[in-house]
Length: 246
Image (cartoon, rainbow, N blue to C red; front, side):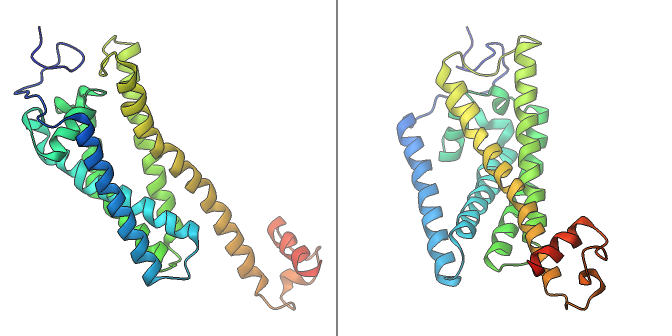
């Protein structure tokens, strides 16, 4: 019999020690920390930039939360990946609880470790950059936001695909058989980083397009683009012409 609760049962989990803190207490501590972080961030953004739209404030909350999780929580894994099974601090116990849905975090899996390292060193800091660019209404906000959101979409897709491939093709599951570990921990907690980035990725091109059209509207009417529909060279120019002369 294995000396750990992780699947597959033959996983080489070295030095496992059961968590000393009850699961509910761990989850409440994590939820409380996130709530405080979001509350402070929202209050600070509202104080510094009171004219920010609600959508922008929510975007700031999202990227600050993502950046904090990437840099600190996932950063903990990057540093302590080789002795996670015996950890008894808050982050260590949270990782051991989550690993019941994906034991790769207990065995220094190559793909997971490399993916998390890139997330900690690159995507986490860029999340904070996007939050700052959003607060300052900087023109680089949307291009960098799309890059970060695409990284989340790609990373989550790869994360899901490799785990499910091993389970259904190689017959090697990483999650315990209890449904809530798979659906709540593994699926839902990661699926959030597909839904929100997908929405932000779809919204960014629309906002950029609107901004480009508005910039065209500022061109003087005697400009050759607006001398008539026939003189407008592209479909975008014709659209702008109709908007200005309707």
